[in-house]
Length: 186
Picture (tube, rainbow, N blue to C red):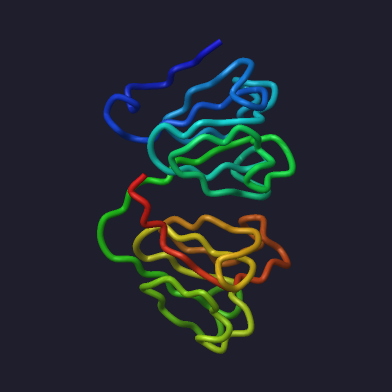
């Protein structure tokens, strides 16, 4: 069974096709926007193909759990990009043209020392002498923040808005150590 949710594929916007089984086998679901719960369309999702755009995929419904950044390409096995469970939800990352700005704070609720980033930062602790990053305000652009320096470890997708606490978006106890702008024109 193949579901189509809109004309985005023809217009060059985001398009991702999910498959129940590895190697693009089994039932499929074509998606051009955010999907908070894949179980409405597939019993499981073990491979996908990104036709256009960039997406974040999550191992839990409602954009929770571990998340992974996918650009145009084929992903024949969810384990190939580090996911330990089936894909459960996805979010289309809109293309952004213009400046990138994020203000990071050492403590929750925009408290403590803070710094504004306009470029990628491979080590927040070393560059800004912050012991942690527990809240932020994404002013412009879309960002990926990583658990470890040099863009390694678990990641979190941040779109424009205020994030008073990383716990509120499911990242209790995770130290954010590097930040990268999502500049892909995928």
